[in-house]
Length: 347
View 1 (tube, rainbow, N blue to C red):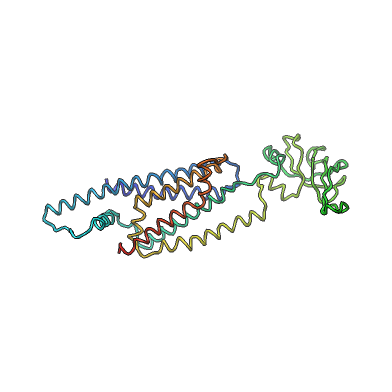
View 2 (spheres, one colour):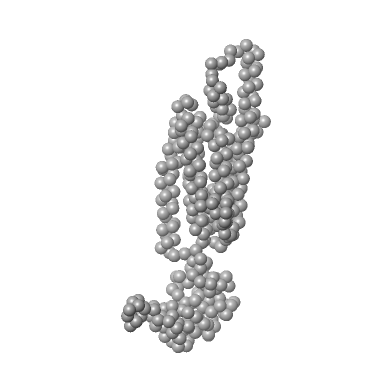
Protein backbone atom coordinates (compact mmCIF):
# COMPACT_ATOMS: atom_id res chain seq x y z
CA UNK A 1 0.00 0.00 0.00
CA UNK A 2 2.82 2.40 0.87
CA UNK A 3 4.41 1.97 -2.55
CA UNK A 4 1.06 2.62 -4.24
CA UNK A 5 0.57 5.77 -2.17
CA UNK A 6 4.06 6.96 -3.11
CA UNK A 7 3.31 6.54 -6.79
CA UNK A 8 -0.11 8.21 -6.41
CA UNK A 9 1.42 11.26 -4.71
CA UNK A 10 4.08 11.56 -7.39
CA UNK A 11 1.48 11.08 -10.14
CA UNK A 12 -0.68 13.91 -8.78
CA UNK A 13 2.37 16.19 -8.72
CA UNK A 14 3.11 15.41 -12.36
CA UNK A 15 -0.51 15.87 -13.43
CA UNK A 16 -0.74 19.19 -11.56
CA UNK A 17 2.40 20.41 -13.32
CA UNK A 18 1.11 19.37 -16.75
CA UNK A 19 -2.41 20.80 -16.26
CA UNK A 20 -1.10 24.12 -14.92
CA UNK A 21 1.49 24.44 -17.69
CA UNK A 22 -1.08 23.73 -20.41
CA UNK A 23 -3.50 26.25 -18.87
CA UNK A 24 -0.87 29.00 -18.75
CA UNK A 25 0.54 28.43 -22.24
CA UNK A 26 -2.94 28.09 -23.75
CA UNK A 27 -4.21 31.29 -22.13
CA UNK A 28 -1.12 33.35 -22.94
CA UNK A 29 -1.20 32.18 -26.57
CA UNK A 30 -4.95 32.55 -27.00
CA UNK A 31 -5.81 35.28 -24.51
CA UNK A 32 -7.26 37.64 -27.14
CA UNK A 33 -9.85 35.10 -28.28
CA UNK A 34 -13.44 35.78 -27.22
CA UNK A 35 -14.48 34.28 -23.90
CA UNK A 36 -15.38 31.76 -22.59
CA UNK A 37 -12.02 29.99 -22.64
CA UNK A 38 -13.49 26.61 -21.73
CA UNK A 39 -10.36 24.55 -22.35
CA UNK A 40 -8.18 26.79 -20.19
CA UNK A 41 -10.82 26.80 -17.46
CA UNK A 42 -10.93 22.99 -17.51
CA UNK A 43 -7.15 22.76 -17.09
CA UNK A 44 -7.19 25.33 -14.26
CA UNK A 45 -9.78 23.42 -12.27
CA UNK A 46 -8.12 20.08 -13.00
CA UNK A 47 -4.90 21.44 -11.47
CA UNK A 48 -6.81 22.91 -8.50
CA UNK A 49 -8.71 19.69 -7.75
CA UNK A 50 -5.56 17.59 -8.03
CA UNK A 51 -3.82 20.04 -5.69
CA UNK A 52 -6.57 19.47 -3.13
CA UNK A 53 -6.32 15.70 -3.53
CA UNK A 54 -2.55 15.71 -2.91
CA UNK A 55 -2.60 16.64 0.84
CA UNK A 56 -5.29 14.01 1.43
CA UNK A 57 -3.03 11.37 -0.10
CA UNK A 58 -0.12 12.70 1.96
CA UNK A 59 -2.11 12.42 5.19
CA UNK A 60 -2.91 8.79 4.40
CA UNK A 61 0.73 8.25 3.42
CA UNK A 62 2.01 9.77 6.68
CA UNK A 63 -0.46 7.80 8.78
CA UNK A 64 0.65 4.59 7.09
CA UNK A 65 4.29 5.55 7.65
CA UNK A 66 3.78 6.20 11.36
CA UNK A 67 1.95 2.92 11.73
CA UNK A 68 4.86 1.08 10.11
CA UNK A 69 7.38 3.06 12.21
CA UNK A 70 5.65 2.21 15.49
CA UNK A 71 5.22 -1.38 14.44
CA UNK A 72 8.98 -1.60 13.84
CA UNK A 73 9.71 0.02 17.22
CA UNK A 74 7.43 -2.50 18.91
CA UNK A 75 9.17 -5.32 17.07
CA UNK A 76 12.62 -4.00 18.09
CA UNK A 77 11.48 -3.65 21.70
CA UNK A 78 10.22 -7.21 21.74
CA UNK A 79 13.52 -8.39 20.23
CA UNK A 80 15.54 -6.63 22.93
CA UNK A 81 16.91 -3.86 20.71
CA UNK A 82 17.63 -0.79 22.90
CA UNK A 83 15.47 2.25 22.12
CA UNK A 84 16.54 5.90 22.12
CA UNK A 85 14.64 6.90 25.26
CA UNK A 86 16.54 10.14 25.66
CA UNK A 87 14.85 11.65 22.62
CA UNK A 88 12.18 14.23 23.35
CA UNK A 89 8.70 13.78 21.94
CA UNK A 90 9.34 16.53 19.40
CA UNK A 91 12.61 14.90 18.33
CA UNK A 92 10.90 11.54 17.96
CA UNK A 93 8.15 13.09 15.81
CA UNK A 94 10.81 14.77 13.67
CA UNK A 95 12.64 11.48 13.29
CA UNK A 96 9.40 9.82 12.25
CA UNK A 97 8.77 12.49 9.64
CA UNK A 98 12.14 12.00 7.98
CA UNK A 99 11.95 8.23 8.14
CA UNK A 100 8.60 8.51 6.34
CA UNK A 101 10.12 10.38 3.40
CA UNK A 102 10.58 8.29 0.26
CA UNK A 103 13.97 8.19 -1.36
CA UNK A 104 14.71 10.89 -3.89
CA UNK A 105 13.70 9.94 -7.44
CA UNK A 106 16.90 11.11 -9.08
CA UNK A 107 20.29 12.74 -8.44
CA UNK A 108 20.51 15.93 -6.42
CA UNK A 109 20.93 18.05 -9.54
CA UNK A 110 17.69 16.68 -10.96
CA UNK A 111 15.88 17.41 -7.68
CA UNK A 112 17.08 21.02 -7.75
CA UNK A 113 16.13 21.38 -11.42
CA UNK A 114 12.62 20.24 -10.56
CA UNK A 115 12.44 22.85 -7.80
CA UNK A 116 13.47 25.57 -10.26
CA UNK A 117 10.80 24.32 -12.68
CA UNK A 118 8.17 24.41 -9.93
CA UNK A 119 9.06 27.98 -9.01
CA UNK A 120 9.04 28.96 -12.69
CA UNK A 121 5.54 27.47 -13.02
CA UNK A 122 4.35 29.28 -9.88
CA UNK A 123 5.49 32.59 -11.33
CA UNK A 124 4.06 31.71 -14.75
CA UNK A 125 0.67 31.03 -13.12
CA UNK A 126 0.89 34.38 -11.36
CA UNK A 127 1.77 36.13 -14.62
CA UNK A 128 -1.10 34.42 -16.45
CA UNK A 129 -3.59 35.32 -13.71
CA UNK A 130 -2.46 38.94 -13.85
CA UNK A 131 -2.75 39.21 -17.64
CA UNK A 132 -6.07 37.34 -17.84
CA UNK A 133 -7.56 39.66 -15.21
CA UNK A 134 -7.31 42.49 -17.75
CA UNK A 135 -9.24 40.41 -20.26
CA UNK A 136 -9.36 41.14 -23.96
CA UNK A 137 -9.85 44.83 -24.79
CA UNK A 138 -13.31 45.97 -25.82
CA UNK A 139 -14.10 46.82 -29.45
CA UNK A 140 -13.96 50.55 -30.24
CA UNK A 141 -17.73 50.73 -30.77
CA UNK A 142 -20.81 48.57 -31.24
CA UNK A 143 -20.72 48.93 -35.03
CA UNK A 144 -17.22 47.45 -35.26
CA UNK A 145 -18.22 44.59 -32.95
CA UNK A 146 -21.30 43.88 -35.07
CA UNK A 147 -19.29 44.01 -38.30
CA UNK A 148 -16.72 41.56 -36.91
CA UNK A 149 -19.49 39.21 -35.77
CA UNK A 150 -20.98 39.34 -39.29
CA UNK A 151 -17.70 38.28 -40.90
CA UNK A 152 -16.44 41.68 -42.01
CA UNK A 153 -13.55 42.25 -44.37
CA UNK A 154 -11.50 45.26 -45.46
CA UNK A 155 -11.79 46.80 -48.91
CA UNK A 156 -10.92 49.99 -50.73
CA UNK A 157 -13.88 52.28 -51.41
CA UNK A 158 -14.51 55.61 -53.11
CA UNK A 159 -16.63 58.40 -51.65
CA UNK A 160 -19.52 58.36 -54.15
CA UNK A 161 -21.53 61.37 -52.96
CA UNK A 162 -20.72 64.72 -51.41
CA UNK A 163 -19.99 64.12 -47.70
CA UNK A 164 -22.37 65.63 -45.17
CA UNK A 165 -20.22 67.28 -42.49
CA UNK A 166 -21.88 66.88 -39.08
CA UNK A 167 -19.15 68.18 -36.76
CA UNK A 168 -15.93 70.17 -36.87
CA UNK A 169 -13.17 69.35 -34.38
CA UNK A 170 -11.12 72.27 -33.06
CA UNK A 171 -7.71 71.93 -31.46
CA UNK A 172 -8.15 75.19 -29.58
CA UNK A 173 -11.57 75.91 -28.13
CA UNK A 174 -10.78 79.64 -28.11
CA UNK A 175 -10.00 79.72 -31.83
CA UNK A 176 -12.63 78.03 -33.98
CA UNK A 177 -10.64 78.86 -37.10
CA UNK A 178 -8.27 75.98 -36.29
CA UNK A 179 -9.93 72.77 -37.50
CA UNK A 180 -8.21 69.51 -36.54
CA UNK A 181 -10.74 67.02 -37.89
CA UNK A 182 -14.13 66.35 -39.42
CA UNK A 183 -17.02 64.03 -38.62
CA UNK A 184 -19.16 63.28 -41.65
CA UNK A 185 -21.75 60.88 -43.02
CA UNK A 186 -20.29 59.20 -46.10
CA UNK A 187 -21.78 57.25 -48.98
CA UNK A 188 -19.21 54.85 -50.42
CA UNK A 189 -18.81 52.78 -53.54
CA UNK A 190 -16.88 49.65 -52.55
CA UNK A 191 -14.42 48.27 -55.10
CA UNK A 192 -15.66 44.81 -56.02
CA UNK A 193 -18.72 45.33 -53.81
CA UNK A 194 -21.88 47.40 -53.50
CA UNK A 195 -22.15 50.76 -55.26
CA UNK A 196 -23.77 52.35 -52.23
CA UNK A 197 -22.66 51.73 -48.64
CA UNK A 198 -23.25 54.23 -45.86
CA UNK A 199 -20.53 55.06 -43.34
CA UNK A 200 -22.10 57.33 -40.72
CA UNK A 201 -20.17 59.40 -38.18
CA UNK A 202 -16.82 58.92 -39.91
CA UNK A 203 -13.92 60.90 -38.48
CA UNK A 204 -11.20 62.13 -40.84
CA UNK A 205 -8.29 64.48 -40.07
CA UNK A 206 -8.81 66.23 -43.42
CA UNK A 207 -12.05 67.33 -45.06
CA UNK A 208 -13.44 64.39 -47.07
CA UNK A 209 -14.45 64.93 -50.69
CA UNK A 210 -16.15 63.09 -53.53
CA UNK A 211 -13.85 60.68 -55.36
CA UNK A 212 -11.51 60.21 -52.38
CA UNK A 213 -10.40 56.62 -51.77
CA UNK A 214 -10.62 55.23 -48.24
CA UNK A 215 -10.26 51.87 -46.50
CA UNK A 216 -13.54 50.52 -45.13
CA UNK A 217 -14.53 47.62 -42.87
CA UNK A 218 -17.80 46.12 -44.09
CA UNK A 219 -19.79 42.89 -43.96
CA UNK A 220 -20.83 41.49 -47.38
CA UNK A 221 -23.60 39.45 -45.75
CA UNK A 222 -25.17 42.39 -43.89
CA UNK A 223 -24.98 45.74 -45.69
CA UNK A 224 -27.43 47.25 -43.18
CA UNK A 225 -24.53 47.52 -40.71
CA UNK A 226 -22.89 50.09 -42.96
CA UNK A 227 -19.14 50.60 -43.10
CA UNK A 228 -16.41 51.76 -40.74
CA UNK A 229 -13.69 53.92 -42.29
CA UNK A 230 -10.16 54.07 -40.88
CA UNK A 231 -6.54 53.12 -41.41
CA UNK A 232 -6.08 49.86 -43.31
CA UNK A 233 -3.84 48.20 -40.70
CA UNK A 234 -6.23 49.19 -37.93
CA UNK A 235 -9.22 47.83 -39.87
CA UNK A 236 -7.40 44.55 -40.60
CA UNK A 237 -6.90 44.11 -36.86
CA UNK A 238 -10.58 44.83 -36.28
CA UNK A 239 -11.55 42.27 -38.91
CA UNK A 240 -9.47 39.70 -37.01
CA UNK A 241 -11.10 40.65 -33.70
CA UNK A 242 -7.96 42.29 -32.33
CA UNK A 243 -9.07 45.40 -30.46
CA UNK A 244 -5.74 46.14 -28.76
CA UNK A 245 -3.37 49.00 -29.33
CA UNK A 246 -0.08 47.94 -31.03
CA UNK A 247 2.13 49.97 -28.68
CA UNK A 248 0.31 48.78 -25.56
CA UNK A 249 0.34 45.21 -26.84
CA UNK A 250 4.11 45.36 -27.34
CA UNK A 251 4.67 46.66 -23.82
CA UNK A 252 2.32 44.06 -22.33
CA UNK A 253 4.10 41.38 -24.34
CA UNK A 254 7.58 42.01 -22.94
CA UNK A 255 7.28 43.66 -19.52
CA UNK A 256 5.56 40.68 -17.82
CA UNK A 257 8.24 38.32 -19.10
CA UNK A 258 10.98 40.56 -17.74
CA UNK A 259 9.23 40.50 -14.35
CA UNK A 260 8.87 36.73 -14.68
CA UNK A 261 12.62 36.30 -15.27
CA UNK A 262 13.43 38.56 -12.32
CA UNK A 263 11.05 36.56 -10.13
CA UNK A 264 12.65 33.24 -11.07
CA UNK A 265 16.11 34.60 -10.30
CA UNK A 266 15.07 36.33 -7.06
CA UNK A 267 12.78 33.66 -5.61
CA UNK A 268 13.07 30.40 -7.52
CA UNK A 269 16.84 29.96 -7.45
CA UNK A 270 17.46 30.73 -3.73
CA UNK A 271 14.78 28.31 -2.57
CA UNK A 272 15.67 25.67 -5.15
CA UNK A 273 19.46 25.56 -4.82
CA UNK A 274 19.78 25.35 -1.02
CA UNK A 275 22.02 22.38 -0.09
CA UNK A 276 19.36 20.57 1.94
CA UNK A 277 17.90 17.91 -0.28
CA UNK A 278 16.12 16.09 2.56
CA UNK A 279 14.50 19.35 3.65
CA UNK A 280 13.19 19.96 0.14
CA UNK A 281 11.67 16.50 0.12
CA UNK A 282 10.12 17.14 3.52
CA UNK A 283 8.43 20.25 2.14
CA UNK A 284 7.19 18.38 -0.94
CA UNK A 285 5.78 15.57 1.22
CA UNK A 286 4.40 17.72 4.04
CA UNK A 287 0.58 17.63 4.32
CA UNK A 288 0.65 21.06 5.99
CA UNK A 289 2.69 22.72 3.23
CA UNK A 290 0.74 20.99 0.47
CA UNK A 291 -2.56 22.00 2.09
CA UNK A 292 -1.39 25.62 1.97
CA UNK A 293 -0.44 25.19 -1.69
CA UNK A 294 -3.83 23.60 -2.43
CA UNK A 295 -5.66 26.48 -0.74
CA UNK A 296 -3.66 28.95 -2.84
CA UNK A 297 -4.47 27.00 -6.01
CA UNK A 298 -8.17 27.04 -5.09
CA UNK A 299 -8.12 30.82 -4.53
CA UNK A 300 -6.41 31.30 -7.90
CA UNK A 301 -8.91 29.02 -9.70
CA UNK A 302 -11.91 30.81 -8.18
CA UNK A 303 -10.33 34.18 -8.94
CA UNK A 304 -9.66 33.59 -12.65
CA UNK A 305 -12.93 31.75 -13.36
CA UNK A 306 -15.04 34.90 -14.01
CA UNK A 307 -12.55 36.26 -16.56
CA UNK A 308 -12.16 32.92 -18.33
CA UNK A 309 -15.90 32.23 -18.29
CA UNK A 310 -16.83 35.74 -19.44
CA UNK A 311 -18.89 36.70 -16.41
CA UNK A 312 -18.57 39.36 -13.72
CA UNK A 313 -16.97 38.73 -10.33
CA UNK A 314 -18.75 39.58 -7.09
CA UNK A 315 -18.45 38.72 -3.43
CA UNK A 316 -15.92 36.00 -2.67
CA UNK A 317 -15.01 35.63 -6.36
CA UNK A 318 -14.07 39.32 -6.51
CA UNK A 319 -11.82 38.89 -3.46
CA UNK A 320 -10.19 35.82 -5.01
CA UNK A 321 -9.77 37.69 -8.31
CA UNK A 322 -7.86 40.44 -6.50
CA UNK A 323 -5.64 37.86 -4.77
CA UNK A 324 -5.13 35.59 -7.79
CA UNK A 325 -1.96 37.22 -9.20
CA UNK A 326 -0.19 37.11 -5.81
CA UNK A 327 -1.50 34.14 -3.84
CA UNK A 328 0.75 31.41 -5.27
CA UNK A 329 4.13 33.20 -5.00
CA UNK A 330 3.32 34.48 -1.51
CA UNK A 331 2.24 31.02 -0.33
CA UNK A 332 5.28 29.28 -1.79
CA UNK A 333 7.53 31.98 -0.38
CA UNK A 334 6.04 31.47 3.11
CA UNK A 335 6.26 27.68 3.01
CA UNK A 336 9.80 27.94 1.63
CA UNK A 337 10.70 30.31 4.45
CA UNK A 338 9.19 27.89 6.94
CA UNK A 339 11.38 25.13 5.49
CA UNK A 340 14.50 27.30 5.64
CA UNK A 341 13.81 28.16 9.28
CA UNK A 342 14.00 24.45 10.12
CA UNK A 343 17.39 23.86 8.48
CA UNK A 344 19.54 23.95 11.65
CA UNK A 345 17.46 21.25 13.31
CA UNK A 346 17.49 18.96 10.29
CA UNK A 347 21.03 18.33 9.29
